[in-house]
Length: 250
Ligand SMILES: [Zn+2]
Ligand SMILES: [Zn+2]
Image (cartoon, rainbow, N blue to C red):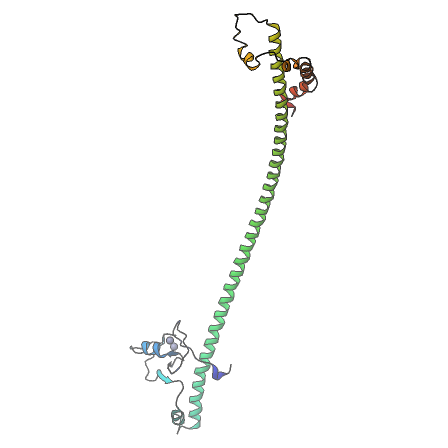
C-alpha cells in the first residue's frame, strides 16, 4: 500500500469514516468528515471533538476539498516564494504524517487489546477444557463402578434364580411324595374300615367321592406304590427334605 492509497479517517470518536469529498481539518491536526465537522464547528466557541482544543482563530478550522480541481492546484500556491511553497508543503505533510502515525498507534492499541483478550479467552478455554476433562474422568470412573455393581447384581440374580429353580424342584418332589402319602393313607383307611350298611362316614366322604370304588387300577398301586414311596422317602427324598428345611446351609 503506497502513501497515495492511504485514506484519512474521521477523528470523531467512534466514527472512523473514510474521508472523501470535503473534510474539516483543524489547527490541532485533526480531521473530520463533513457530517461531524459541520455539526461540531457550527457552534461557538468551537472545540475539537478529538482533543478538546479551543479553535477560536480565523483559520483554525478549514473545510477543504480533498480532490481539488486542476485549476485550483495550478493557482493556490502561485506567486509564492519557493521557501513559502515548501513551508506550506512541509506543514501539510506534517499534518498527514501525524494522522498516519495516530492511525498506526490506534491500530497497535487495538491489536494489543485483542491480543490480551485472546490470551484471556485461551486461558479460560483451557481452564474449561481441564474442568471438562476432570468431569469426564470422574464420569468414566462412575460408569466403571456402576458396571461393576451391575455385574455383581447379575451374578447375585443368577445365583438366586438358580436357588429358586432348585427349591422348585425340591417342592415338586415333595409334592409328589405328599400325594403318594395321601393316596396311601386313603387306601389303608379303606382296607381297615369295613363297610357297615346304614352307616355313613362323613370324614371320608370326600375321599370316597374322589375314589368311588376299589378299582383294579387303584389296587394295583398297592405293592408297587409302597416300594416307590419308601424308596423316595428313604433315599433321595429324605435328603432333599432336610436340605429344604434347613436354608442356613446355603
Ligand atoms: Zn465523522
Ligand atoms: Zn484536535
